[in-house]
Image 1 (tube, rainbow, N blue to C red):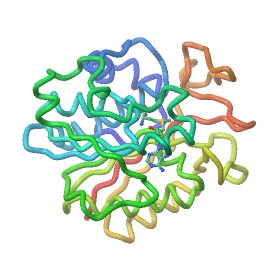
Image 2 (image 1 turned 135 degrees about the vertical axis):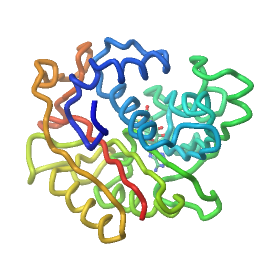
Image 3 (image 1 turned 180 degrees about the vertical axis):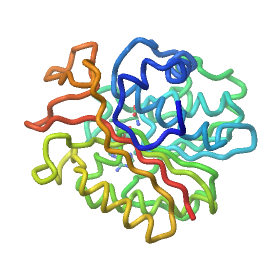
Image 4 (image 1 turned 90 degrees about the vertical axis):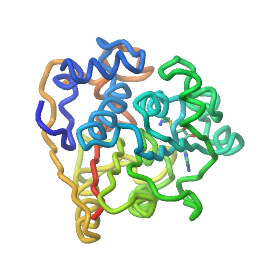
Length: 262
Ligand SMILES: C[S@@+](CC[C@H](N)C(=O)[O-])C[C@H]1O[C@@H](n2cnc3c(N)ncnc32)[C@H](O)[C@@H]1O
């Protein structure tokens, strides 16, 4: 597999030994063709290839929910600050009742991905609202968010988060984000609400802005064309193959952004 770029070729990537290895390390089923699992593996592989996942590296995770990424990165020697909304705001956003919120340090290693002592030594947790980024977090080698920036209320707020969170990176640091991508239209979309959907033109605008700030970002809009890539899951989203789905009439998949700070 070449160096990972923004990508939507999920079936081929999920079936690669590289991505299956990440699934096993996170105690996920390596045969499960699910876009959420792809997102975790995409983040891990993008950071690994850029030499971010080793002892001495510091990482910052946003809206970590119940992800295993903080535990995975800690098991590889990184120091991690994992963040998410406070309980009250998360409950208001229905993240608690839909079991997508952990809200505590211990819950982030529930699957035992990292040795317990190493996890406690290397991972810290704090509440943080991605719409109001504080100035006292420090500087990190890398940061990431998975399936979160589309939940900030508007397309513009997600975009603002991508730009402003760069302040936490040292020069040359890496940011990796995954978000919802609208495959149906480059015009009609969901631009406000609990979930928004980024179109190709939105991603291109974000990339142009980042390049103007001196960042590197490499886009690839190639869509996977495997049979599982083409399958569209519909509510109640119970199909074991779930790489594309239909939301409010739009066909959607996840898109990954890999950004290097100037
Ligand atoms: C769909 S879940 C994703 C959780 C996790 N990142 C994952 O991929 O499994 C959305 C997450 O976004 C968090 N979230 C929503 N709005 C947020 C905000 N304004 N600031 C920080 N986190 C937020 C929720 O608490 C929840 O953990």
